[in-house]
Amino acid sequence: SRYKAEEQPKSALKPLYTLKLSEPERLFIEYLNKSNNVKWWYKNGELEVKYFGILREDNMAFYPDFIVQFKDGKIGIFETKGGATAKDAVERAEALHKYLKTDKMLRGGIAINVNGTWRYNDNKEYEYNPSDLSDWKILNF
Image 1 (cartoon, rainbow, N blue to C red):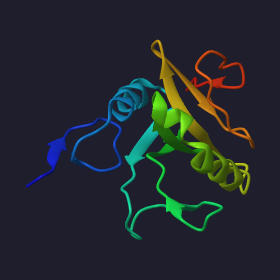
Image 2 (cartoon, rainbow, N blue to C red; image 1 turned 120 degrees about the vertical axis):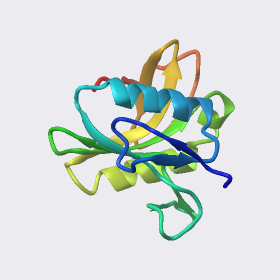
Image 3 (cartoon, rainbow, N blue to C red; image 1 turned 90 degrees about the horizontal axis):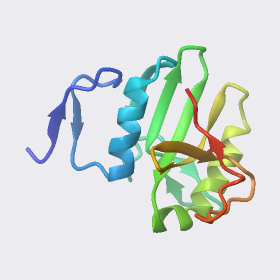
């Protein structure tokens, strides 16, 4: 009863049940639904073993926000952030980088929305400086 059913055209779950999405999550869903290269996406859950988790260096798991199936067969794993949450994402970003390197079919990273453009960071050493995003790639799919 706490969840709201939503019809999302490319969601792997039909309908998608959400509690309350953050603004970056909501904007990322809009972006995924508009992409011609996205086959489907999955909004991952949190804090339960039934959801997809990645082990951090401190042996705690984190649960990336989105898993994306691209039409070329690659899988994307993205953690959406904004503002201060992007600055505090070091452990998540570096664990995600390490995981993504295990398979050539994986891509992803920490994703942020900057003035309507999505950027992502998949670097081994993560840094977020809103004044200098030169190490962040433009997300274009």
